[in-house]
Length: 560
Image 1 (cartoon, one colour):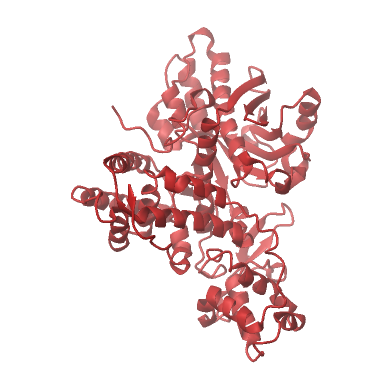
Image 2 (cartoon, rainbow, N blue to C red):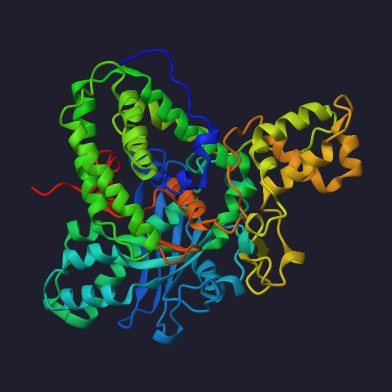
């Protein structure tokens, strides 16, 4: 592999549009894949010290992951949930299973304490020895199908497996201090948790193993000696589902440096691969193989939502066009990946463009994987406003980030139709109709473009040489805009280049942007405000984990 002069990262004004962010796909930098590579590379060991579940599927279990320096344990509680109480809504009060990720190996007293709190979720409290709190519900029909098939001595139908993709779906995985859990600052210096959301991804990985074991246990209890053991290849096709709503959307607005680091790492990876002057036979073969496997991944992607149906149709057309292009394309000479990206920008939708942008990274672990170390936010001083900055510099920074917003008529209803607020009942973010609901007084500062336009208007006429602190003394309502503008110096991809309160806003675009970095697949919106996804489908289970199996599991194996 040879390289030429480095191609620049794509312009934030292009990348940070919501339609494009809502078309992102998983890649080598995704947090699930980062974790599986680490666990395999470091030779993590796994154990199940407790599995105390009765024939009704009620009880608790402990799954431990032993890394080089520390052990983490999933403590799982299985419940007998009446069908009428099963709900994916955040306001639910009972679930099929509840979980906590424990820092170490819990003893009997720890398990007793968790038993009193974890099943209550928000109504309970955990401690700094716990890193996450989560819950999950069965996919009722698929669960029943798998249990019945195994009980009859048969394997479940792969088509039904692919239609759903998971036996259980989580409705929340809380961490970073919520409900008493350990704050991020307590664990951020641990090497294995340095990349974002590694504790949460480990919790989901162990949850998937527990779910596989639980369905087998239930089948064994029902069928006795004739019960079949779930085929390992079928089991690998099962992931963990997740139902995610508006609670996740404000995260990327409230963490501009962190989100910028994610996007910037991906853009840097894309730029590095685009800069490869000549690809080897092995690199081209890997790309072509994974393209064929990813076609199978897309083929299994189902959705009933009109927006996603349209996006899937676009993506499938894009894959057909790409397949035809690859029949004659030279992928070896003259910056092949840069030429492929440039071709996609003219020939494909955003879905297809971002699909290719992720796929070209796969043959280049040496160029890409180290960037995971750049994705956390360690800039603890960025929140402090530099009051000595001259007004002119602050004005220029705001204009660089939000100059496009100054041209919008913010008095028009369509430009400020929505308002973000926090539900009193669940303390979760919500979005409502500003002119139809009495919510304006409770609005959260999640409209940075509108606020920036107001700040620029207020700055008109100010002497550019005076400290911005003088301006903020008279206009403290613009402190958060100045702070965000100053953060942009280290976070060029920190601001969404769209209006987050317009009548046309699609919050699921923000959800998908974040979830793609988790490594989610098979996005299935259920409205413009919540989405179902699949996590870890295809991943090796702990007893299968190796350097080979940990690498490309997200892409289905091609049929023999």
